[in-house]
Amino acid sequence: MSDIKLTKYSHGAGCGCKIAPSVLTDILKSNITPIHDDKLIVGNSSRDDAAVYDMGDGTAIISTTDFFMPIVDDAFTFGKIAATNAISDIYAMGGQPLLAIAILGWPVDKIPAEEASKVMDGGRQACKEAGIVLAGGHSIDSPEPIFGLAVTGRVDLDKLKRNDTATKGCRLYLTKPLGVGILSTAQKKGVLKEEHAAIAPGLMSQLNTLGQKLAPITGVKAMTDVTGFSLIGHLSEMCEGSQLSAKIDYNKVPKLDMLQEYIEQKCMPGGTTRNWLSYGCQVELADDSYKNILCDPQTSGGLLLAVEDDAIEVVENLLEQNNIEPTCFGELMEQGDKLIYAE
Image 1 (cartoon, one colour):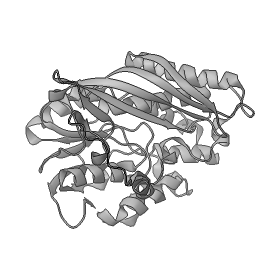
Image 2 (cartoon, one colour):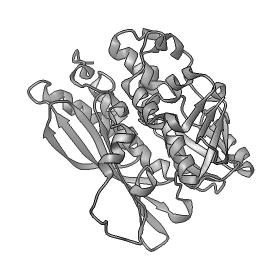
Image 3 (cartoon, rainbow, N blue to C red):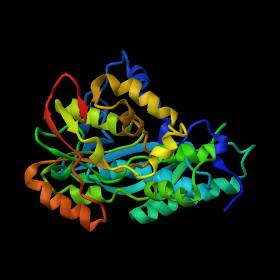
Image 4 (tube, rainbow, N blue to C red):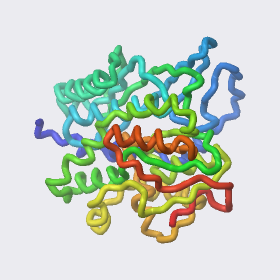
């Protein structure tokens, strides 16, 4: 492992680098009338994980891109996490990844090129585990290290999963625990305990291949991955798109066990505040402290599932087979004054 600590060269970390949702809304405003294409099934309007284009033969192409600045110090691990995070968008739509193109920004006057090579190898390793080739890419000399992928996938249209198609009564599940933003901030502050050092990188390096296995289950009515906009943000988008509200049990939300000691040390990333400012008006919390974890920006987070009652058994069995505790933490109901009620 190199002595170079990549997180010292970036002002943000992982998906916590994302532009605040409220600011992003302003950026996406345009007076240019977009081209209408009937084959574009999913685009900007639904704020989903990727674009989906109908190929006219019962299948669709999924196209996505994701990149960010280092969330860990080790170059190889950074590359693997960034690539895993980008590929996740394909799985979140129920698709199969096909190939990837790299996006690399590197401060060549500050960090040796050898470290960038390790980042690329981390990306190659994630692609290898996903069964796809890293087929090319583009690089620039930039003030801060940046890495990610543009990924192309495919999906049978009858297996496509979206984030805006949930139905009333659906139960909510999450495939990875929350808290990697808090642990990553503790690492950057130098207060992360040694016994906790491998937890966040391990979670962030896990591919969400489960999404492809969930795709054939019609009772999985909606699916998305939880990343920089936090559980609150991505669940809000699911509720808003589906014209529903969610009632969640905070104590049942999957979360890492050791988070409170780091919260007490003020190890919340800046993205937590940005997420609350963007989505908090749509949320009612029984306890204000809940937002420290519910708004924690995740990098390469888990899949958020909305599951109909008649599919619960098969989904919970599939989760157990993949070593995931099948905990239902909430359900969807008729839309109320708020999008999310956390008790």
